[in-house]
Image 1: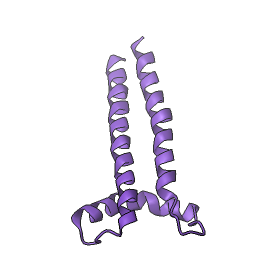
Image 2 (image 1 turned 120 degrees about the horizontal axis):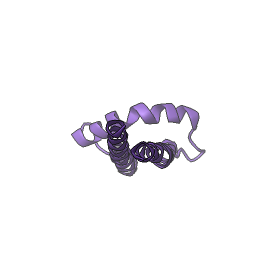
Image 3 (image 1 turned 45 degrees about the horizontal axis):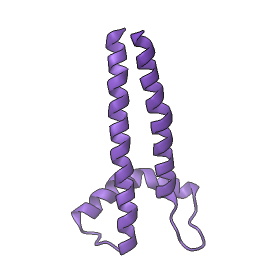
Length: 100
């Protein structure tokens, strides 16, 4: 049981780290989009390539406001916060219960 508990604890920590990293990638992409970035810049291409698979489906759920404001990064950040609060905490709780 301790092996499974340790695995769940490690999985929760890795998931938390990955979600935090992706959170910041989305934030940086949203901030860079305000300054009309060069689409051939490698950093801009990385940010678009890393976030577009998540943001594109969210854009279909949230049509742009009348001002043209894209709220998909905000929704993605809210989903990430939910996953960190619910999923990571649940995995850590299961790991703690298995250690008892």
